[in-house]
Image (tube, rainbow, N blue to C red; front, top):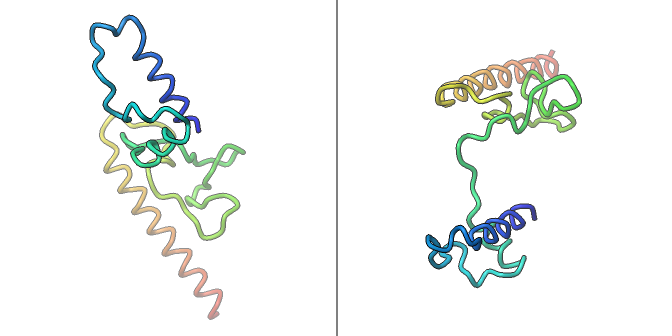
Length: 123
């Protein structure tokens, strides 16, 4: 698990001589988490995302595009991504209103698709 490798690296850095005068006892994870399984367990229990992950599920028509221009996940039926991950880059302000507009647009797209499917089914 890549995060476990990062945790090991962070521990090695913190043990460096440059930190000798600042370092106290390890608090989190517990110092007893020394093997990969214990560290992976710690990561599973405590990992979370912060700061509005953006651009992790890009929209596009090229091979790197995870979703199309209607927020549908390529190759997966009836699944859309409706969050900041479809935004290509972080905006300069707080992304809340932009994310709300993505949700509004998705609602319109889903409603239109539903109406189209109903017309096709019932003539």
